[in-house]
Image 1 (cartoon, helix red, strand yellow):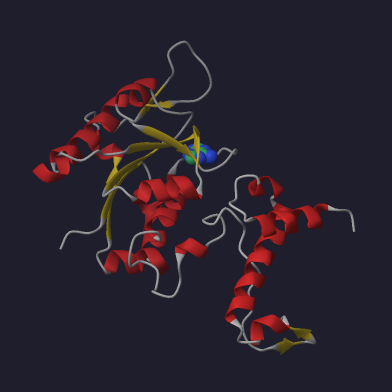
Image 2: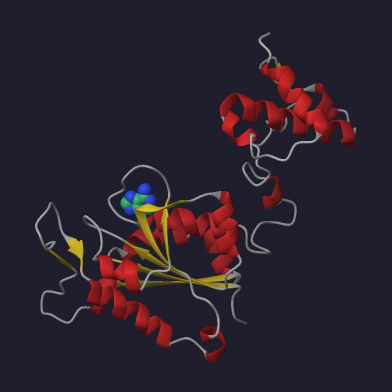
Length: 253
Ligand code: ADE
């Protein structure tokens, strides 16, 4: 059986992926053949004695750049391994870089629709611009901060995408309820015991009244979003009653 998704990662540090891919949800998805992940060492695609992957920037400037040749060759090698039917499909080749579009739940959902992703982990001060211009089809940043390389960013993207693939989460957990999937932050949740150190679980949750509970969840999600990330409410889809709740909550108490 072929997996739902194939992910190829190009990196200078293959060992960084060992632990994240051999624990928890990702390991389970790999074991169940829902996703297959291949790690490619960029250094393998060098030809000189010193296995050089980086070089000084033309025109001067701080730091070193990743050379284009090993990256092009690595991508071309994995493309040449594709079956005929795979070749007919669009293949996103994604560079992880602080200059990319800002990663979000929406982008995770978009990527989860593909059957194959290639992730290129940048390093040093960046990559030769020709990689961007002539190889890469997308650039993603996981936030406005600079990591020492794209590996951790690639892992963030993989984790967020793989958990959206059908069958990866247990049947009860639904990625549709996640914070951000609804456009709202998630409501507060409780488990047993019903009272812990005098702190009681909200009575409504013990009531067994599913309609009231659903309403409470929705209200709490709206309140939490208003308190913590009010800008998200502008895009969230609220009904008239919920809009009115937001207006009421915005009034000074
Ligand atoms: N590489 C270095 N910093 C990064 C970031 N913020 N996102 C993605 N890749 C990166």
